Image (tube, rainbow, N blue to C red; front, top):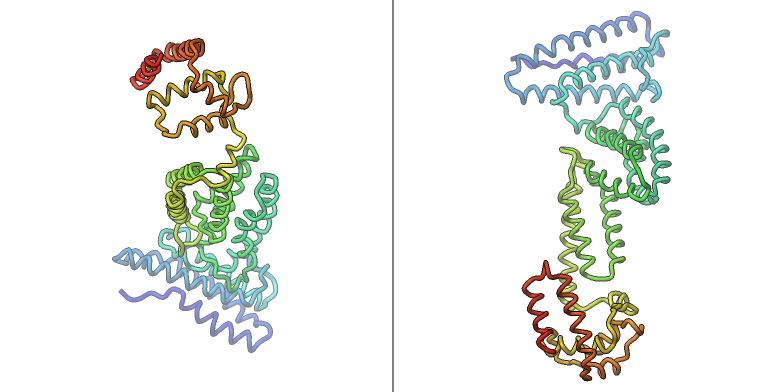
Length: 419
């Protein structure tokens, strides 16, 4: 089959005929202007008519895709060349220029007809398009105008919803960077523009559906994970946020529980298929999972190497804590004697056990128990105290009788055998 080059006319017209004529004449003569428009329209119609037939005769799917992507890239490149000769505001309107025969109007007419060819490819052959192709200038200009307006509204909504300034800067950074791009030399691709357009829409949906201000930040993080917002700046923000949150937990166990919960939640999160902010980087979910796994290993190793020792802040947490009981001091002493004599408590140093209970337990009649008082009652046999303790134990047995397990029975029998 003979090779088909549908855009060769426009390539020559833009870079040879039009460039040469505009250099030689300040304004196009009527004949050149009229003939040029006629040729542009005829060539556009010819391409629209012949392209379908040409693609129908191609034997392989890959050839169709290659032809569509090549045509797409050529059209964008040609539109970009034309845009360099026009002011930005002339590229965003939909009306075909009329009136004076000027080079500017001819460039606009040519640009609009090329845009029509590109739109035809996008509508009829969407699945073959190269999503990493740069977008034409008019697409970028329209997106810039919309994002500038939308960012102002989103910022106001985020501020009232309790989103901190640093996170706002991270979320809006890609939009602000896009608005600063020069439309004739922008690196923005179809993929990137589609991503930001979808992200912009979902941010508004989140604001509209938001309930309590306290839950909105978490909903925002869930959304950014769902749309795979794998920005380096967001990942660094997220790591810092979790690291700071861990400092609020006083024990290793609580830190590990929080890390493992986040690991489970992120692993089970629903993601938007084939959607990514930056296709050159790992998905956000993978990066989060890896970071959490390393943190969990780190905290486990720290805990192991410290001999399961407590951090200073863990110990200070229990400094003023006491277990409040309905027992009297004699009853506490008697119960401890039963537990130690029966071997349920296996500590060898009984003095340390008594000191521990005197420090961390209170009786019904006094807020603090002196170690000496507890020791005296520990070694003192008193029939009345023994009976009161036995009555308390029997009350517990009766209360849990229906669900009493074997271990509880053994413990109760062990207690009763001491009387």
